[in-house]
Length: 116
Image (cartoon, rainbow, N blue to C red; front, side, top):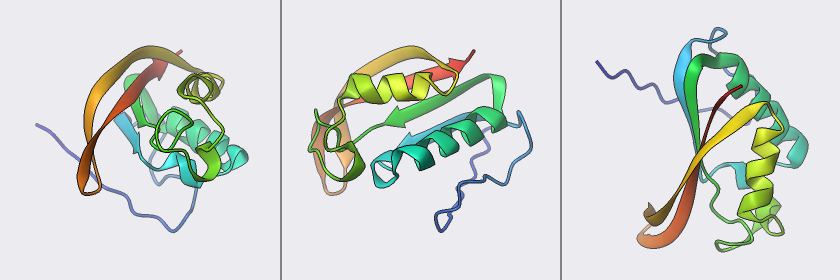
């Protein structure tokens, strides 16, 4: 049975879940809004709530490689991947192809990580 719960916040970086209680975290087209310190705090929270065999999947839209704006305007996909790895996640795989974004379809990549 699939159980999906969407959490809408107003910028809070503390997630309302128990430690190691979530099997998948998706950060799709969201991290570019956050400054580096906030991204690191959010990744730390994701690590805290993710189960030992869990997955974090990131669509880092608006990086240097993909319509750069905001906090990712000067960061490459590789630099974003490294930043997430620095939060104790282990890189799993990069998937590149066509991705639906807003009202269009564009080429992009999703990067997946597990826990160390």
